[in-house]
Amino acid sequence: MSSMSLTDRSRIAILLAMSLMTASAISATTARTSAFAQAQAYNWRNVTIKGGGFVSGIVFHPTEQGIVYARTDVGGAYRWSAANGKWVPITDWIGKDESNYTGIESLALDQLDPRRVYLASGTYTQSWAGTGAFLGSTDLGATWRIASVPFKMGGNEDGRSNGERLMVDPNDNSILFFGSRKDGLWRSSDHGATWNRTLSFPVTNTPNGVGISFVQFVKSSGSPGSPTPVVYLGVSQAGASVYRTTDAGATWQSVADQPAGVVPHHAALESNGMLYIAYSDGPGPNGATRGAVWKHDTTSGTWTNITPPTGQGGFAGVSVDPQRPGT
Image (cartoon, rainbow, N blue to C red; front, side):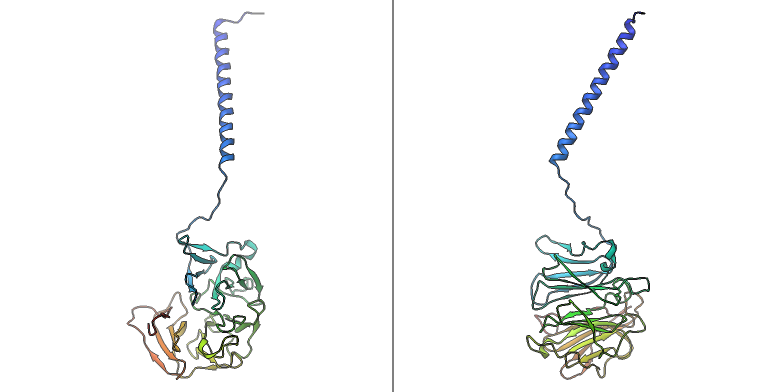
């Protein structure tokens, strides 16, 4: 056997030393990584996205301070958290199979029970879209009950900022009305668990596909524990566009002397019985070129044009200050 030269032995020694150093470094790194993973648990949370959707409505609770919700056209619904200073998603539980529910057509709050909130959910009314559903919560949106319905909703279609078309009766909170796009007026008498179409209402749909744009109960016309007799509905058409019932929905009539040539978007009712309605010449959010704001005295039946100076476009929203009548 030939003898190994001094140079060969030196090379082998160097290689062995390098191998030991590498193994030691890998072992130390693995140990540190394992210790870090054990010490640092993952904390998953939603990524804040600055934009990318349409906030189609913001609804304040009429009697309970600090309760505010927002609805969007494709991104679900949110509740404002004053304690955290941010909007909290309340529909992130919706999965892929129910993704149609992320388009919120309308949102309603219960004046008698601040913890109740309702969503009319459904994104499109096209032939390929699924039917909608009403989502109801009794704990500020922490948990939900789903009530499927046989018609479609259009949370991401024209007129999505109209409303609110879903409302809770302020005198009897077991009753809800919903004005659909293409299937007329619907009513629930069990807190939104089941729904039936109100056949007495004469309008089923409108040429622009928006249907009923808002529901407005007149609380002062009724008494606690009984259905509110007087209710106004806005219909997205330029002809007879405001209807009224005085018998809790048994019969409906078109309101006399109402504005023509424009379609109603929003309504707001003062405690003194004045009903304010914002109008445009289209359902929005695109294509409106003119509009108007009218005041209707629900007692005398008179109409007053209070349209402010206008530029391009119509009027899509109106609100009143409950602390300052006339504002």
